[in-house]
Length: 589
Image (tube, rainbow, N blue to C red; front, side):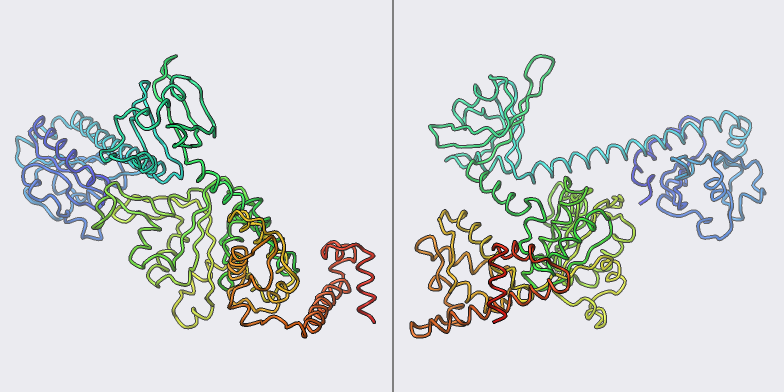
């Protein structure tokens, strides 16, 4: 849609006003030579295209669009006027300027000698008048665009506020609620009989004494715990006071349920603490991948992370994000395998209000827009349909997109990281994945190894998950027996680290004291690896010794290759240098 067509009603009003002043027919064309507005016979032609638009030759209108300024046709035999005429006796056309080019033309057309005399006889004044009208139209376009931007920004701000993980309310100086987000409304309306909304009600209606504590005190708080209603309401609250001169005008309050706030804090510390620290293990293959992360993080190139399900592909994506300059910007995740095919486009691109049945009445910002200058992590990229693959490719190539139902272009500044457990190269060969998208995504490839290929990381992972789930489940489990570890080490872990974590969570639940034993492991694991009888305990000890010796031999090969010193090996095994030499001595025997 052309810029003039977007303000067609305003353009028509200006056309009508011009004709009423000069008593000469007027029309406005856009850059495609479509008639946007007009008077007289041109009003009947609104929506149609001038004949010149179908010609490969350049006549009056194309010339004015290209050249800018005004052009006067005193004689309709002027070669510039073109062959198509409809009783015109003269015409003055003026380009409508916009930034560095033209977005259309405004013309006055004479059809008889009287109109011709007024038009051509007063040519200089008419040209000045038309140029002023052209500037007016250009200003109207700019104003419309600015209003559109303000409206979009307001809706985007509303979207951000409503998608905030915190409850937000704004109260006036009397403590009356004048604004709130959806999470705050849900929190406050938990009270019995609260069906009519929260706006207009006093803060004390929900929290007795809150007005004096938060508003009247004229204090700003940051993550302060409050208890109201005899301790029934326990929240963590931050506030910001907005002054009008020296008087309190409004107070913006951010709050969360205290228990939920603690859970969120733990989740944040667990999932993204130090970024790379969340990736547990020190095996050579994992160490090599972790050493790549800081280098990759400083780049803007796309990253394709491959590996089996449960290997930790998202952890590496987060590590890349939080290790670079984008760490303070959003990390936005979308799982292509978890979203229905008919919704994934609107989730990525967003949509304008009324785009489709059931759409949000205010429109919706998509993942590309919300990510800003952060990182977009597209998981299960191999599940995208060919149609969506093409649309994603266009975004990656042009670094811009439009919301569904809109023609306004939005720039993409975010970095793209994608992941899949599927063989994209094979899918390209089979014709189920676009080769051009594959090459665009696979600029920096990373392959995360399965757990079975780095089993020397398993003890560290087990200890990590014991601490994590013991804390979350409010238990004091902090140990695991060698028998239980032996069973875990002998399993193939087809579900990788995710399967291991679920197994440890189960065992922490089942543990009767502070130690996980074979009996606390899942029935599935015990059935695959039955424990020894009393008579067979010597065999178990022998198997464990053989396994430990095998691991030690693997590490000694790394020492021989110069990848590891014996001091480093001792630290890695958690033993002293002298203990290491004793084990090596026993191994040689």
